[in-house]
Amino acid sequence: MSSSILITNTTLFTEPKAPLLHDQWLLCRNNAIHSFGPMTSVLDEAEAVQINGQDKLLMPGLINAHNHCAMTLFRGLADDMELNTWLSDYIFPAEAKHVTPEMVYECSKLAAAEMILSGTTCVADGYFHEEETAQALFDAGMRAVPAQGVIDFPAPGVPDPAKNIAAAEQFLLKWQGREELITPGIFAHSPYTCSPQTLQSAKELAKKYNAPFFIHIAESKQEQQLIMDPQGTSPIRHLASLDLLDRDTILIHCVWLDDEDMEIIKKSGAGVVVCPQSHFKLASGIARTTEMDRAGIPVGLGTDGSASNNSLDLFREMDILAKSQKAKTLEATAMPAHAVLTAATVNNAQILGLPQLGKIAPGYKADLILIDIQQPHLRPFYNKDLLVYSANGADVDTVIINGRIVLQERELLSFDMAKCMEKVRNLAAQI
Image (cartoon, rainbow, N blue to C red; front, side):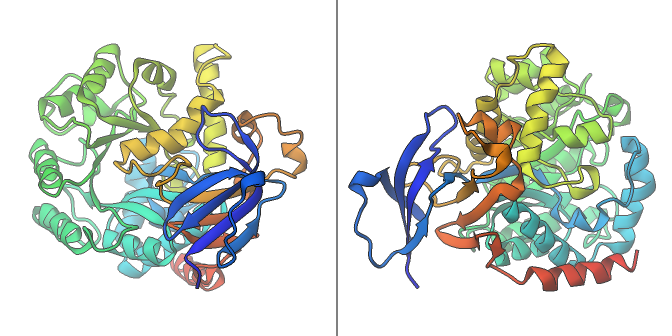
């Protein structure tokens, strides 16, 4: 099998702020981008796999910086509820009864199919039995940052909360350095499900292994009242008082921040990942994303899990992010399309500690997607803004991850999707 891929006759989107390049070729060698240029200078690569990019746009693969992949099983199970009711009365009980290693593996694989088909090449995940998520995403050919869930209650795979940190360490030991596609991390669920001591122990473990540390924070207006033994006067100040904020901390949601919170986050270097559709659906609110972006806080984008979105299509998520900020600020110039594209590519790569992703440049990883721009809703194609405001995941024709073609002409090549869907149907029949 050839280790080179040559894409020809394509329109090239190298990064959000750069102009489109027309009539281009691009060469991947092994797992990296080797070179690109105008068709007048195309290389003679007879041994390379050839892909004709005519009428297509070649761009960096999208990065989903927050997901709970296995929750595809709970898609549509509990809709139209506020956050605490949704979690306490439906999701937590369903997880306690139905989350098993088999469920996590198969349902994470289903999530991988949905993401690959909609142009996502890398995902950050946080859940339980996370070794199964890591295996499923690896088997599906995806790049991933799976993070083992830590919580101060009995959890799937960790029935004794006293062993939550030990279980997380075992996960890191199993997966760190094992596969190039997998970067393991730690996911402390939230300050209302983890004590200050647990949060600090989880962060120390992440530091010990130089692993990313994820936490849900400031998602709801009432969150401060729910925090276990608050050490600060806001959820962010609670984390700051516990010395949990630094460049390896990824703050998920951050819907309810005041000016002091934003200044603390900016000084710490921590990244923020917003999930606007989940925030809309659970009536959490609209994050101050435009202000964060203008203040220089790294802002990334995620879908959240299928139970609270209910889609894993990042094109759909980009559209909602841009428009929600315009509605919130009453500024048509708020969160322009290039800033949203940056959030889903360059910023997410930076936030997750994967600097060789998010752009098309020599030496960057060959995580690429081809968009069919010969669709009625994408004509005429004046500029990249259309990717945010008109494109959707179904426009993705081909996906390359780490130099391997995993989707070609809408056909998933990395695993048997029909078999996976049948297994998930059988699991759903038990609920």
